[in-house]
Length: 275
Image (tube, rainbow, N blue to C red; front, side, top):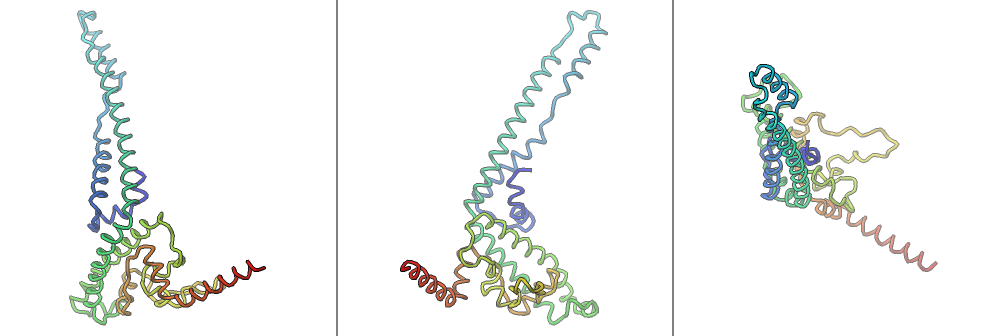
């Protein structure tokens, strides 16, 4: 498996399964890698040398004129084997180079992929999720009896939310995958604004409890479908930010405390310099 297929597995899966668009240069680089990768299994190895030699020996044993035996097959087998081995070496080297080119192209296009492809896809997906939740009405999805008694429209929306939740999870994983090697945030180091512009603390104030306390239980259901319903009904909306945008959101929410810390640190540095 090419390295880029492992490194950006969720991105490529989303491009295939969820029709996530890719920048033209990334799509072109991926097409090259796919074409070279698909060519390798198509190579057919010639028969083993011993098989061809044994056939020629049998022919010599049964020939009335062994000295005039046609040995072109043995000679040709050696050429075909060299040609096959050379093709394999060339295609493997080509696959490795195509893999590097695609990996570098994705890395160089991270901001574009996030801003121009992942973000609009995520926003459109959220519109679909919101529409499905609205179609549910006030049906309590954790209650099987309520679902059975619900109108057909609500039941169809409930079923649709299963695949929508899977797509949402994949797309969030794609975002994390793309930003994995980018410079980390300067301020939003805990990822508080990674999924929501207002910050996870605004939605789940207890999520950052003291390490000495037991982990807090999220306020939403454990399953992905239930979590989406909880978010939509609570008026919460996710976003798909770049690292710089997360930092900007953090500063907006914590500007006063941040400026206070900056002033205090400046005073400490000044006092240290005087001492």
